[in-house]
Image (cartoon, rainbow, N blue to C red; front, top):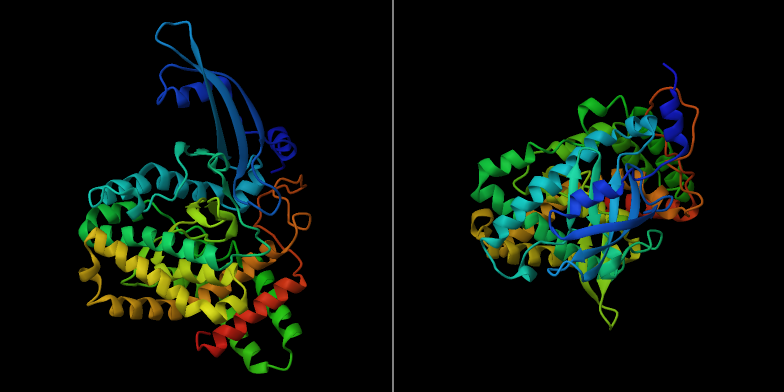
Length: 428
């Protein structure tokens, strides 16, 4: 079946599809006296920043009617609109509908229950996990969120990766997020099971094996080529790499589905573009915020750790700080679990918890390698080199994605460093 006229239109244009009436209906729920007068729209992300949804930034202007009916109070707000890609072909290629359902479930059900559970344990917001943007609306094809730029949050440089202070802040907030899952699972098992039932594995499932075969064949070929070009003399490392990559997708599927005492609702996509930071007047990080929950999954907490550490940091930083990072994560996890009333149910003491985390990380470190094969070519290329999700195409049917970004020298070095570390550490 060929591409119809509507598909051609979708390939050549993309908007948020919002209008004043729709916006008015959304915001009048919280501001009954609000009248939205106008709005302006702009793209919400650049090339290389997002691949499974279309982002738009809307600047809204309006007024609030005063009690006397005459005086008008000025009202302004900037929001981020996240929509399914307009192009049906691209939408089906990335299986965007399923990913979108994950995020809708997160904002409508999972996060509200997490907040309610935590607030039953503590009245202090600084103690609990709240590090997500305010959500105004979440439905099948649209998620509307606060624009974190208004609160002076900034995104790190994806090519530079994360530094020491950013890693510390991220690990502390990530551990708070994971702690809620662990405590809620132990204390409210039926309710927690209902939450996890709303999540579907976005990539590494048996149902997706054939769909992503060509995509991962290319990633595998590129990874082996990068490492063999960089360290051709170290045959034993290549043998280990090829052994893992021979059945890469199946190995990744096994890692995300394995049973674990430390299984949690994972963020699933912890890389630089999905972590924002707010800095104080001294240049120190005062707040951290996570975005993009399309790839949430139920699996070992070490899946998020391996993804974050191997996709977002340099080898020199890892060599000097890996064990310290696990301890930072452990300290906050223990603190949060104690606050939520589940530390003693999960471990004999804090030393035992650290051992459990270290063992989980060792078991899941390979997940960081499999993720890096996909993420490093994208995170190390320039915006000009990044594939454009919205470019017009001549495809007549949906096909698996082909983000075949030619690896650059930085990508080759980073990929090789990961292989060296995992083999030397007995993790590959």
